[in-house]
Length: 307
Image (tube, rainbow, N blue to C red; front, side):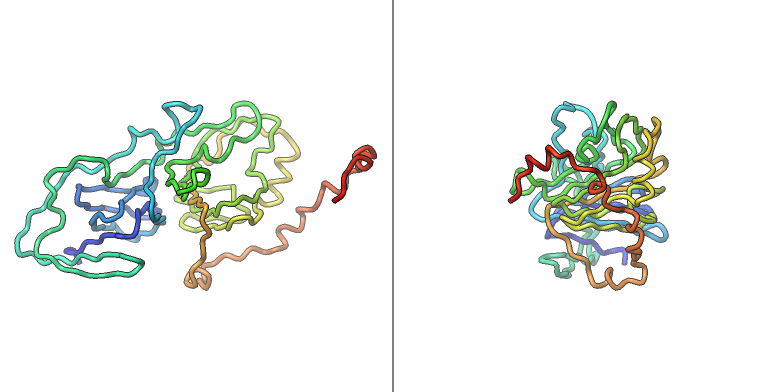
């Protein structure tokens, strides 16, 4: 149906197309969003979407906050996602008379329908900053260590949404795109870790080696908070044996992560999907306890305190 628009009264949508372009008409004008770009449609704004062929992607909805650029700290004024690269619609309007339109609202997770006899996209001009935007992920300015060790993964943050807790964002959107890896005397793969954040990863295009098993474009990988995770043993062993060369990584690919301080749940639809990929637990059998094989210094034993 062409004369139909939608408004999300619950929260802001961050949309990540993975296959097929989105021709989005908003009250402020048009946004044409392709795979490799993202867009945000804020709460309460009316819009409609035309697609070109088979289309799929990812959406992250946030409540009670808005997406904004992260603070850059010592980076200063430039780096990561630069404000100048975010694009907004140019005003474009349609004037119709006695033209029946359906407007679908999402409120409290439920859908409601209303009708009106004129086009909702009749804004002749606009000003202000509460407007939809899009961003080309290839314009992201990666930073990283040029000596040793890892920098905190916050360096991959494109946009963030604050929470009431100043120490814990409601959500972050991060990307992993082509960049140089040059740190010396360093174990370079993502180290085994567990953190308080929930991590949901997707792959827009290309290949991504940071997962513990095969990871295809359009798929999802999820780790809830406080669950240990990391790369497969083969990657761990190879990176532990020798100092890797200076090299480019993630060539021809863009992966992303939705990270949140909130717990996420998996729908029955996803959990029971025939497309769900099961890990073979045996893949971790080679990842053994190496620490206990070392002889403990007698002085450490003597001075250790048991509780």
